[in-house]
Length: 105
Image (cartoon, rainbow, N blue to C red; front, top):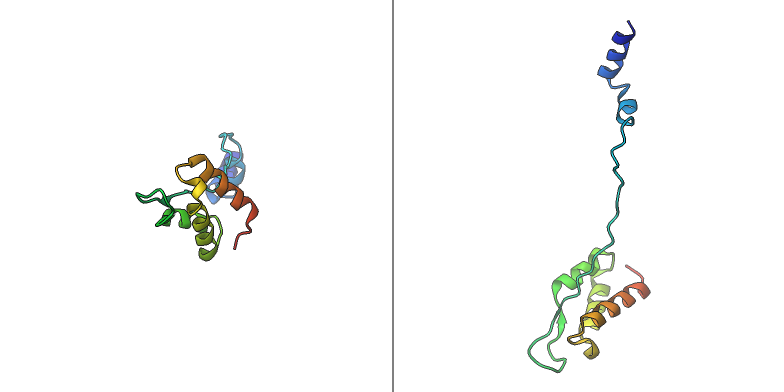
């Protein structure tokens, strides 16, 4: 009789939470940090003439919460900085510093 009652509970779904919580699967939810792709069009000149951010740079800033206008301003500021030409570490550090000090939206 007890088996029949237990089978009825499982079949009706009332015992599902107890069964589902019984095992340990090692699942731990993870949260990924937002990723910003710093990408600037450089051009063939040494001077800062045509330098501008590529769309992926602006889009990734919008993706982490900036308005399009603010994302464009940040990306232009980074890409038009003459001290950052051919300086990948500088591009990264400057972008991280601006993001850390600029409110989103």
